[in-house]
Length: 153
Ligand code: ZN
Image 1: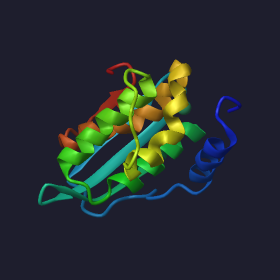
Image 2: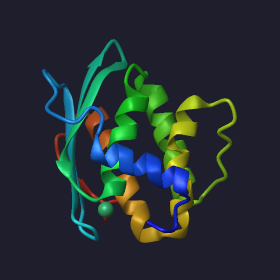
Image 3: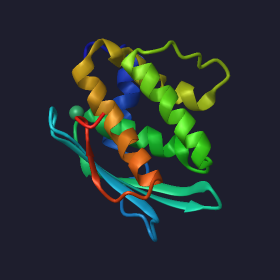
């Protein structure tokens, strides 16, 4: 991952080594599976919504360092967010990593945590690794228990 600067690389490797919120979730009421055929990444996202907010979110699966780190950071950021906030953050993240839009993270702690992926827009194949779990999350929010692939996107 020589394309990432040292700091970002260190964060990604740390999340890959010790993924946060990895494991089975008790009593999920939304889940979805994601598959990225380009890299072989598989990720399952399970959420428990309560009163319009994400009370808890966990993931399982296996994939490359970028997909695992993306899932780990995403679950950290989303816990406790309302569904609306989660969708907005998802959109900002997708805009940022695909390079569609410059994202201003100033004063936005959540987006700042996701900045480790912002240079990925220069590497389209790796973008799929990072966005996979977010697309699975959107499906889980819709309570569609199905598989999404990077080709649906
Ligand atoms: Zn990957």
